Amino acid sequence: MTIAEASTRMLAASSKDIAFAWDRMVAKRRFYTVLGVIILVAAFTSSVRFADESNAGHFFDRLPHLFDFLSWLIPKDWNDVWRALFDIASPNDKGGEEFNFANGRVYVWGAFYIPEYFELMIVTINIALVSTVIAFLFAVPLSFFAARNLTKNWPLRIFTKRTMEFLRAFPEIVIAGLFSAILSIGPVAAIIAITLHTIGALGKLFYEVAENIDMKPDEGMRAVGANWLERVRFAALPQLMPNYASYALLRLEINVRASTIIGAVGGGGIGEELKLSISRGFGAKTVALVLLLFVTIVAVDQFSAWLRRRLVGEHAFLLQH
Image (cartoon, rainbow, N blue to C red; front, side, top):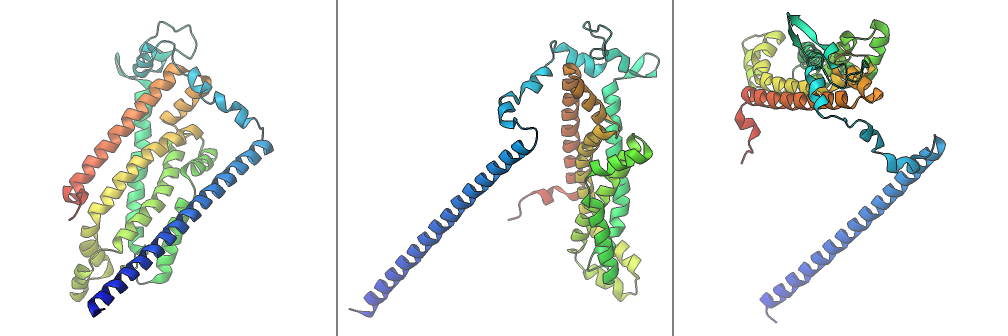
């Protein structure tokens, strides 16, 4: 047997060993995956049954009736959806609140009016916009204090980070409920709640971006004797503003949804009206509100995406090869 033949046989044997080891490893991984899924399903089923027995019960008995509530909200006359949306009098109005669409008009000048739901949607968007702007103004300086490469004072960094973690630890709806009890219901409580949570959320995103900037401009500023504020202003901020603006616009989209949810706990805006409409079973009003919400959120998403592309640049959204 020649050396070449021996080498070929050894290589073939080695390849078989590698393939056998790979198959064993894949089989073991599949076994553990299947076992983990079975355990997860068993644990979930047991917990659901325990919760069902511990509470009111009848969860599984009532499961076939899951969509009954939605059937109650189907309008009898689909034209009432448009009448409710634009505050047009309905022929089905018998003096109750279900079809009193024209009573919600917000008159601006003479016979010109803004439909009630559009006015409430404007309030909701304003809550999100004001909260995002205020939070942005606070989150930007906090991000500089929290960034490791911009602030060498570690107690200040730790304090800033813990503060932002505390602000975003509680959901907006919890903070809004607290301030609604203190300040009474209305947009002010919603603005405070969303602002506090957004400061913590944006602050984290901002300081993580700040820690990855190019420090050569900072070194140049330091070489000519610039102080900390000047280095942040002229070396760091120009690199950060496109990403900061992009994150702020993304957060604005989130805050529009949050302000809608907060309306359900007395935060004002369209969320409060939606909660009342659903609880009373007003089908036409509910569908009109959901339709307006859907169109508004899509419009805000598209506008903010377009604006982010204009600010950051089209190249940032393309795959880099």
